[in-house]
Image 1 (tube, rainbow, N blue to C red):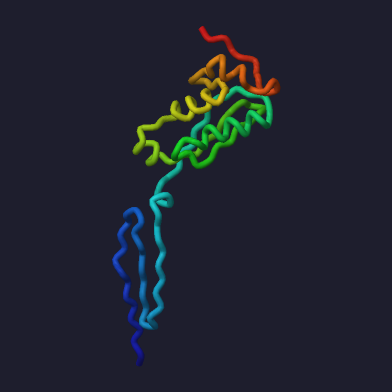
Image 2: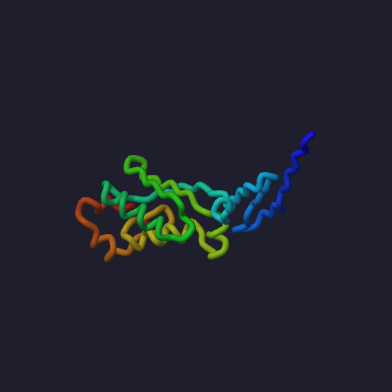
Length: 136
């Protein structure tokens, strides 16, 4: 009777750790678990003002420029930006949703949290100059 022996290496769940399993035949399988795969993405939405497809590109580009933001989708009809971001990366850099909002305002679009400066807003193409809501 032939015995089959299976050796299993130690499994450690740490950033960039490697899982290894080896059987008697000598085949080895390695899988690298990256920190990114271990992170859980967090969803957030907030209002961003704009008008068109050019606005959409600008808003999403500004949001994605913040490290840790993995997805950004702005809806023209609802004026809502939906984000998926890494809570771990945001924590490491002391970022918040306000960090993303500030980047978008710096690109010329008011958000529910921050207003774009007059100069940046006025530099937007005519089709992108949305009707601004007066602040109190």
